[in-house]
Image (cartoon, rainbow, N blue to C red; front, top):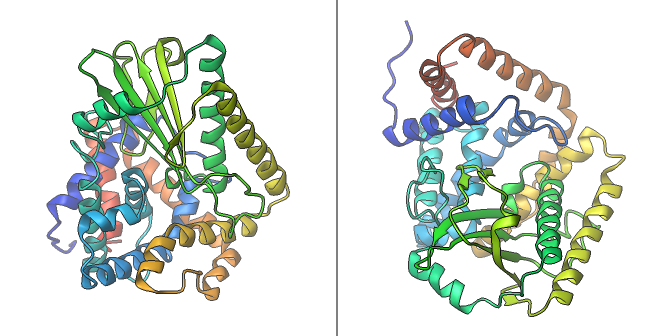
Length: 365
């Protein structure tokens, strides 16, 4: 007989939301760049929840508020990725500690998202109406032309791929898209924030002259944009064709003219090409070392605040020798998931997937 477990209501709610996405919104297998994200989650499960829970405790003891703590870990979509790591049990944590880790993650996300923290309303709302109206009034918008809109569209695609490259498939560590915000005028606003763009200590090809970018797009109507808790979005109409104004800020300073905007786009495109050239000959162990390096780069602000060494422990790089184990474990998870939900209606499949995640968190398997 299976042991009786008292589940945290917050944890259950989070995994019902995740499972709903996995069953109804995931549309098949997860991304495979540079290999399955489920496989990368196995590597994360070996160190990241344990490291983060220790940091959460240290920050709390230092008197750091929940709001400030959340900002140290970038955007809410970054933190939402922590839920996925429960594809596997969290190494080095007890069931109670694993529960505490997820609960704290939920608490941090709740300080950043204004409405539904799991984006079940298909919105990722990070700003108040007053803040959005101020941005609309203060931003330096570049005069719209067809060529400009096309260039910004290509620029967004370039940055999407650049973030996927430097973050080894998990782009939310370098981008946060939020909205759709409605203005008093009836227009709508979508904001794309790109950050953590110069991890030069991990990637030696990175030479961008800026650390963060913000693209502000104003549409003439509601474009039917839907965004989920993991920062994937869709729209019912072409965003480009409905764009009436565009603004771009670089390191919090607005670009004033098209020429400067095109120059920045060129810099980003050049960086992406350089990066693709560097990784062309990468082996899986090469990628794993970058995974470890980038997650500790993400922890840099926290480590510096606590006065700790921000470099990964050298022993952690031994994970690069465990590629076969990671492959087996990820394939085992996928097979279990597929077998569990086969031929089930969506509501029962969601319930089943939720339980699979809970089994890992509460160490019931």
